[in-house]
Amino acid sequence: MKSYTAIVERCPDTGLYVGYIPGFQGAHTQAATLDELTHNLREVVAMLLEDGEPTLETEFIGTQNVVVA
Image (cartoon, rainbow, N blue to C red; front, side):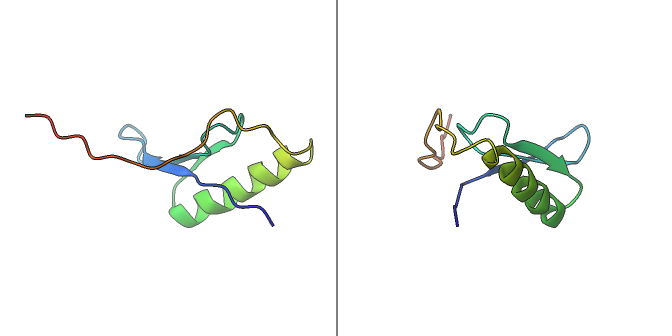
């Protein structure tokens, strides 16, 4: 079993949730609900893993709050 961290955003134009896995080329999708997004991400990652273990281009570290005056 493998675990990846996904970034989830909401598109202001469409209202859709957009998810991607940093550094995992091709691992991105969108959906109307968070449950559907999770399902779609699982499917796309499983499909990409059929070609073998990827070499991640970046590593997710975390988030930071940036305050601007």
